Length: 479
Image (cartoon, rainbow, N blue to C red; front, side, top):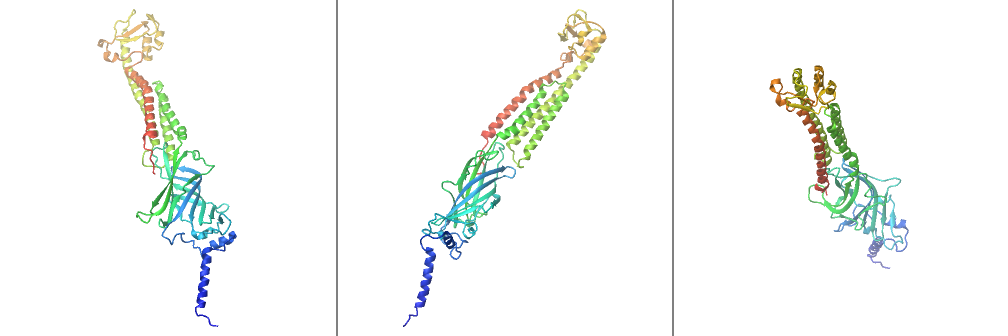
C-alpha cells in the first residue's frame, strides 16, 4: 500500500489547527465548573497579564472608574492635606477573558491570590502624600469576571491627599480639594480613564457630607477628565481624571473660640473710660492686662496655622483688636498727663492764694472784688470753719481758711485776682479754688468722648470686616 509523502505533514497541520480552535473557543460548550473555567481563562500559556487587552490593536483600553467614599477625615491647614477612606472600583473589557455560554454563573469571583495573574490598570493618585491598603483580615479587594469579558476590580484604600489651600479668608474661607487619578505607565494611546456615567462619586450611607467633618461641610463635589504630562514636555500625555470636593468651613466654632473672646477683651479695655482720673493703678492694670491677654490669644491662634506670606482674615481681626486695646491704653496715658498738668496749675494758684488770704481779702458781709468765684459752697453769710471742710474746697485751701481762725461769707466767696494782689489774672480766669482746672476738665472731656468714639469705631470696623470677607472678597480657589 502506497502512502503519500505529504500525509505526515498534513496530520501535524491538522493537530495544530485543532489545538488553536480549542484555544479560541475554550472548553467544550455546556456547564463547566468554575475552577476549571478559571484555570483555563487564567492559564499563563494563553493569557499574558503583562500587556493591556488592546495592546496589539490601534485602540486604547477604556477604564471606567467609580469612587465610593467611606469616610472623609481630618483636614489640616498646617500640613495642607486631607484624609479619605474609599473603595476604588475599576471596570474594563478584556476579550481574552471572554467565557460566554461556558457556565451558568453570572460572574466568576477571583480570589486575591489569583489576581496577580490578571492585568489591572496602573492607577495612582497624583496628589497622594501617603496611602495604604487594608489587609485585615485578608486583603480588602475583589475581582469579578463577567461572560462578555467585562472585568470589575475594587480595592479599599486609605489616603492622605495634598490640598493646596488659600487661607486669605481664614476662617471665613471655602476650600476646593482635588483628587487626581492618573495612569503612571500607559499613555492615552493605550489606556484612557472615564468616570462612571451615572454614579462617579458615591458617599457611604453612614456618611453625612454636611456633618462628616468637625470644622467643614462638604457642600459640593465635581468630577472631570484631564490629560497631563509628567514633565514640561507636551508629549506624551497620560490618562487622568479629577474629583473636586468643595469644603466650606463652619464659622460657629471660631465665633465661640476667637471672635467673641476678642470682642469681650476689647470691650473690657473701655471700662477704664468710666474710672476716676485718680484711679491710676486700676487703669494701668486694666490696660496692660487687656493688651497682654489679646496678644496671647492671637499667638495661640497663629500656632495652629501655617506660616504663609500673605495676610489672613484672622490676622486682620487680631491686629485690629490689638490696636483698639492699645489705643485705650494710650488714651489713659494722655488723660493722665492732662490731669497731672491740672494738679500743677492748681498748686500754683493755691500758693498764690495763700499770700492773698493772709491779707484777709474777704469781707464780713460779702466779697467785693469779683474775679474768681467759688459758688454755692453750701452755707450762707458768716459760717464756722467746719463749712470749709464740706468737700466744696480743695484740701489745701481748707487748711488755709482754718489757720486764719476767721468766719467768712460762704455764699459767694471770691478772691481778688487783680495784678495788685500779686495773682496772675489770666490764669485765675481758668482755675477755680475748689480744685478744678482747665486741664483736668479737658481730661474728663476726653474720657467722655472716648466712651462714644471707641465703641463706634469698633462697630464700624466690624461692619466693614464682615461685609468684605463674607461678601466682598473673591471666593475663587484653586480649581
